[in-house]
Each structure stands twice: as C-alpha cells, then as structure tokens.
Length: 453
Image (cartoon, rainbow, N blue to C red; front, side, top):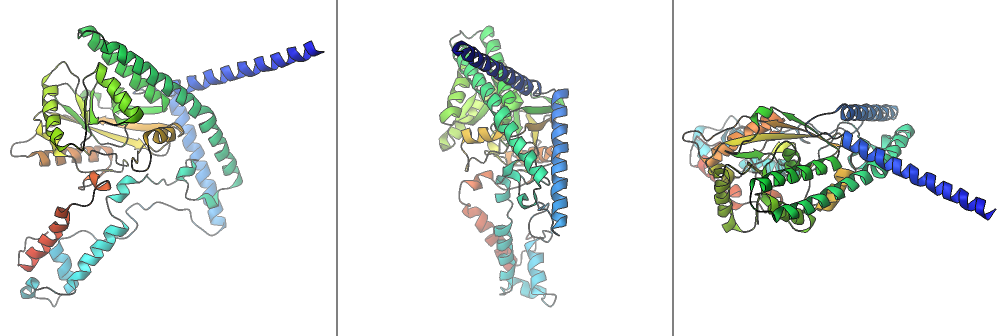
C-alpha cells in the first residue's frame, strides 16, 4: 500500500513537472516568436489585433454601464483642460484689455488693467502648462485592462472585471516570468560575452564580434519586452559620416535602434545595474558616456564626437538632444552641442503606441528596475521608427536654428507637438532669463516699441 502511494505521488510530481516544463517552453516560444524587431510577424499581428478587440469590447461595456447610470466615461482632454484663446502678441492682448477707447498716446503709460494680462497668463500656466504635461503618462481614450490606466473603474461590469482578472493572470503569471527569464539570460550573456571580447586584440575579428555581441544583447532585451517594432524608410538609415539624433522617451530607445543596425551610444553615465551594463558596453565597442553635472566635460564630449565621426571605422553615434525622457506626446528643446560638430545629422522619429503599454520613463518617480518591471508586465511595447533624410547646416544658420529645424522635422514625422521649452525644467528651477523676458517685452511696450510680440 505504501509502495502504491509512493508511486502515485511520484507520478503526480512527474506530471506536474512535465506540465510546468511544457508551459515554460510554450510561453518563452510565444514571447520570442511574437517579437520580431523590424519584421512584424503574423503571430504579433494576431496578438495585437486580438488585444485591440478585447479593449474595444471592454470600453463598450463600460460606456453602456455609464449610460445606464446617466453618466459619461472620463475622456482625456485633447487640447488641454482649459479653453485658451489663440496666442497673439502682448501688445494686442493688452490693448484688448484696455479697451477701444485707449489711444496710441496712452499705450506708453502703465495702467492697472495691464495686470489682468499677467495674472491670466500666470494662472493658465499653473493650471495647464506645456512643460508639466510632457512628464506624465499619456491618457487613453479606452481601457487596456491595466489598473494603472483606468480612470473609469466605477463603470466596470462583472464580465469586464473577470476579463481584467484573467489579464492579470496572463501578464503576471505568464508573460512577466518568461520576460524576466529572457532578460536575465540576455543580460548575463551580454556581460560575459562583452568581457570576453574586451580581451581580444584590436583586429577586424574583434570589431565583428563586438558588433554581433551588442546586436544579440539588444535583440534579447527587445524580446524580453515583447517589443513589436516597425522600421520605415530604411534607405535613410544613419551612416558613419554623421550623427543620428532622435526624440527620447525611454532608455530602450537606443536598444530598439540598435536592433536595426550597429550604432554607438552617447549619454549620461548611470549607477547600479544600468551603469554596469554601460561599462560592459564600453569594453567591446566605442560608446561615449559622460557625467552631465560636470560642465567642463560637455566641451570634451563635443570633441569626442568630432573624433568619433572622423573615424570611419566606428558606427554612427546616437544622441538624444532633449537630454531627458519625454512622454512621447511632444518634442522639447534640442541642446545645441550636437549640432556644432559640423557633420550631417540623421533625424529619427520614434513613436510608441500607449494602448499596449506605457514606454515613458518618469525617472523622477520610478527607478530603473521598477520601470523595467512595469514595462515587462505590460501587454507589449509597440513602436514605429522613421528614418528621415540627412540634414546639414545651411548657410547663415547657427547651431540653435539648425537644432530647431531638425526638431521640427522629427515632430512632424512622429505626429508630436513641437515644444520650445527645455526638458531640464523638470529637474531645475526656472531660469531668471525666462522671467526677465516677459519684463523686457512689457518695458518695450511702455517705451513705445511697436514690434513687441
């Protein structure tokens, strides 16, 4: 009898182990097959279309529940939370406030009513400024069955709640473990391979192996996120005679770009796990890492960029001139250092689909590990990458004008808002020059300068 129970127990454990093995293999196979960077496979297309139909059905059920309660679903504001008047010059707005009885002679005199203009502009900026909303996650029109994006939970029906629970089971019980396993294997393999390649002599074999090691590491990282990437206009891919510049949403931007070809990375040196990976990358390939807080090193970075571009054996460097991650709704001010090198610039527009997962990294709120876990627990990371034709500085154009022209091209191609503000405003206090600019404009108005904007 004891022998029978022991055999039955062994059979049960054997079946359980076999089931877990098959489950793990199928899960990892699904994650890998559904992720083909650069080539949208049939599996990934079917997966994304199925998710969209589920999202649409869930949103429809919530809308019906809201109508039954004589309510409406929360919808994000398309143009902001307040109705702003079209932007005109300061002179025109103040004249409108003063009224039509005001003559040109009194334009150069201070009136108490002028305060209304500054108060209104100030309140509008506090309530709905252009900078703050660039650093918050995008709001969705519907619900993608993730708690972090639902603002209509009071309208969730029982079938939708069951579907949401199944979604949690799939994302955290199936996708997340498989993705973490692939990520751990990919990072470990990359660190070991990069260390091995670093000991080889500087020959063509080392260059070839370095390129393959970097490509393999980036490929596995993209696979661990179920990244579905579509590349457009590959004939405009960056060449080693210039610099690649792109809008910045996530540290994974450069990973997704590297999936489609070798490139050198330029950016801030971090600590922790990210810093360890950066140092390993530096061992096997030509990357440029710098400390952003050291002002003297910025000039050194420009010099290193010039030397890098001059060496035709090195891949083109990828730079994100915004200097920080933006939520993929806008493109903020490009820093001019990149555009002072004097070489062709290859613009790249990167656009993410937030319906399947939020790619934006709010570094002031989440650490890198928490952020990566958030990405891995999403349905997928879906993005489109457009390679734009190379651009060069025109005659009489300075670095700032060149940077703005490139930024505008990226914004148009990616369907992003072109914002003039510096992305570093999320970390630093507003510069005195921004405050003094409005004071100077008003002073010119009082002095009778008709060219005030």
